[in-house]
Length: 141
Image 1 (cartoon, helix red, strand yellow):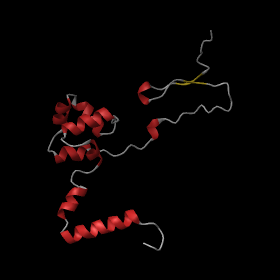
Image 2: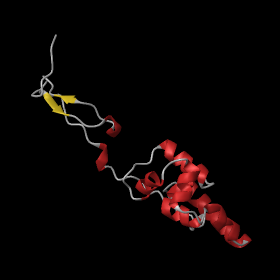
Image 3: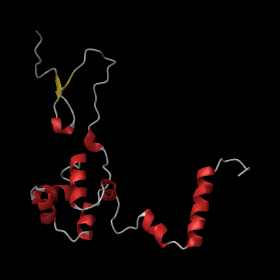
């Protein structure tokens, strides 16, 4: 039975970082480097803006999420990552959908913009959308 010593151990990171203990490989052509996920630029979640939009404090959101204010603070300050569970819980607590968290709540939605358009503007929007969708790149359209 082979035992692993600290000299054969490459590195270790926490399981929460979605990584495993890496060991040196005997195959010189086998890549051993795994890109760490901390270097990804996460999508911006407009949590602070949604709190302001709903006139809620971090403490009130923590109560709705049944968690501590410090967890909400970590989410707000980027010290804790969002996962699907957090996003769904936050969206439910803020009475919105998960995709809404990725947009500024004060920015008009597509539907709100269309609702404000006059009938003539709506026709122009539809004609332009039809043109873009059906554009072939040739001179016949």
